[in-house]
Length: 323
Length: 119
Image (cartoon, rainbow over all chains, first blue to last red; front, side, top):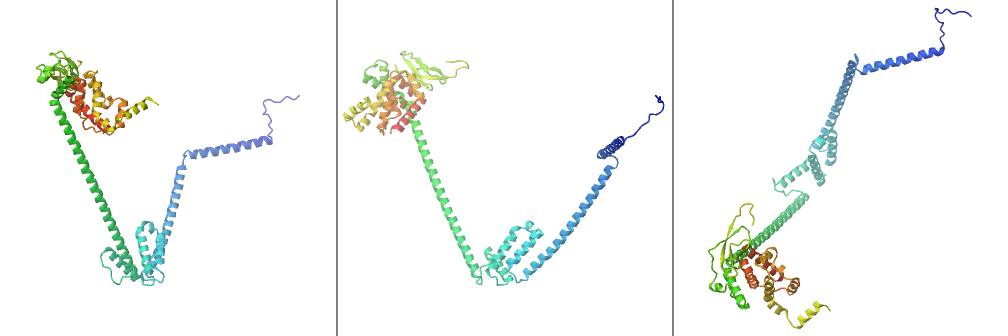
């Protein structure tokens, strides 16, 4: 067996499969390189920003040119339409063969195309259109100048600047009479409403007077009651004493208790009963040892036994001291 | 036939007219006021007046009777009349009432209340 020289390079044999594998590897390396370069650009590598700015400026220039072209086109269209509008207005002024309403509709259409309709006061255009339509409907056979003059005259008459003329068309005179009639009706309605308001006001006034009178009567009644109560407080004791005495005489019992005192009239004691504010209760009479009831708001007390009247002095109790 | 029906029959049987009942009205009122205040102390009467009206004193049966015969002529029913009636039944209570403005007001309100119900 031959001995192989171990120092000699080992013979190599490249197969097709190995070549394909190398090619595939190289393609993969190229793809990776491209990816890395793209990543560098995205990361803002050198020169990339300038390129973006150039493209941006180019786009801006293109947009500016586009705007200029659009503006020029719009101006051209506006000039054409303005000319068309002027022609229509001239035609209207000089009295064309077509009806005014038709011409006005065309003017409004052109004005709408020019974009004047939204910015211009819409009500004015509508009012003008309505006025012209109205004038046109009165007498389409007459000239525009006559119709406009009639319309102006009608406006002056309606504004009160000029009296109605005898030459005014019958339709306008009729309409004015109708307006005058409507005005009269409105004035009548206003007058009726004022009468109703006056009646309501008078009714309220009467009601107020009635309420005031009722309150006055109520107040007088309260005053009379208060007067009666005061009289009762001042002279009631004697009266009740007499009633009690009469009752006792009728019943025949208890006549001995203070009977003599009642006959001689009640006597006022010199001794004063002291009680706290709002205090009520009973105490013993020093004269007859009877029970004297004292009311919560009483300023005097009467002994039912001997009819002696005791003044009650209300004193304020010290804080914390109870009855 | 119940007891109430019998009682009613007996009363009508005696021929007691409505006008006669009204003549007896002051006596009826005075009677039950006197009977009511007689057993009470003056302070009890005062406390009762502070918490209720005189109409509340009237028993339910008598209330129905009085209302059934309304309207009553009650010009005689005054504060003074009530005080007199109470004093007849309870002398101390009578003295207590006339010395208290608040209790006099309560009686006046009671008079108005009764008149509003029965007149």
